[in-house]
Image (cartoon, rainbow, N blue to C red; front, side):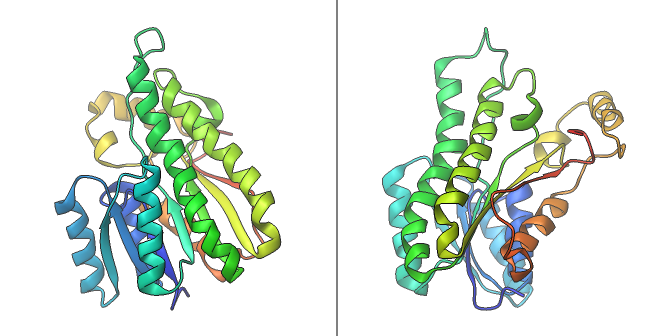
Length: 246
């Protein structure tokens, strides 16, 4: 389905990013696994994809750094002659109540989660415009739609992703480039696994489907948008959340 396509997945060393990288690779895309710090975890993703008989490579880069991202995108295009799919998944949390939140906690999250997406879109879109094709998928969150106490910084960044998605979709549509967002709800990852059992049970009870999602649920939606099946879809936000943001 994605044979011959080159895909960059940011923050792909674990959780949702890992599932997306593996799903796109399984569909035939050559996947660049971006990571910022955990080389061992990124290497495990690469090994999994290689064992599938598919192709991928690693690229270490801090997506919040404008020049580092430019170099990453330029290198990808130099090596592969194209860049077809961008998945902006890289994200961090620095949760705190607003009154206790430091300026650094706010800035760190905005830089990685929102500016990081700007950086990759800015540099990759130059090539996508020339080739008159491209798929950009931004990972937002239901926190950016309904808000979440203790996550003013994260909710603001993820809401910003939604606004960015809609604006860029309008700018790039005439060149056959689609831009969409996926907004996960509570997904079972290392982060949620660390929650106390009572908290996990309370969270599950608050979800209409009465269960947390799996990283693969997000990956399947991303795969759809990245494929030819999503060619006529742009500027949309897809909530994959078990109904929590109804």
